[in-house]
Image (cartoon, rainbow, N blue to C red):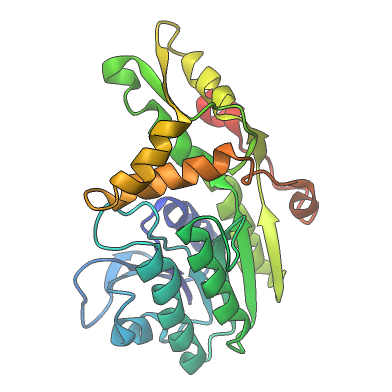
Length: 288
């Protein structure tokens, strides 16, 4: 059985059907009230609601599983978690449970730029989780994604239907390497199915674009819409002032500053050459 942690999130929801199509039983571990036993969500898929902060829940999640995918993240949570509690502490709790359960392969979803001295907390927490996994004795694979293309297209276009605006964070001129959900899910599927990339950290991207290019793609279908630009000084203020009332907004602002500084760009060729037959699902497909 394969455990997908965060299996109801954007990436997990795309990955679970692929694993199921390959004939593997899947257990989804997602937030919610803990249950004494898994619920049957669908043929071949179990749903276990639990808390990554609970050692008992994590032990129950990995029980009987040969492979684990950690796809949970606290970055986008508006309540109930954050990068420290999910991406670091939750990951460490699950890694410990996986070691005790004898899991054969642990796949960690991480982020380009993860480093102990990373410019945003999210990257530092991902780096701590990566290090814990490398030191655990488990067979591991780490996949560092770029900024999620699907999520940014949604975030930038949220006010398009009601206000006719597309939001651009900062100048929108810096190149950002994005990863689409479909691309990431297919790579994880191959890693699980083929047992490949063990002991490796792979940077997996789809395409590099500026926020202005994303805005142009969204505006192509709404010719009367306009761009609402959030200038860099405003992002700097929001990254500090929003912390007490909206930690999520503060995290978003800080991340946008990092991306506007050019730190979110990387070369996708090395990763994609590993699986050249995985089709690119990029801006044209998602915004077209």
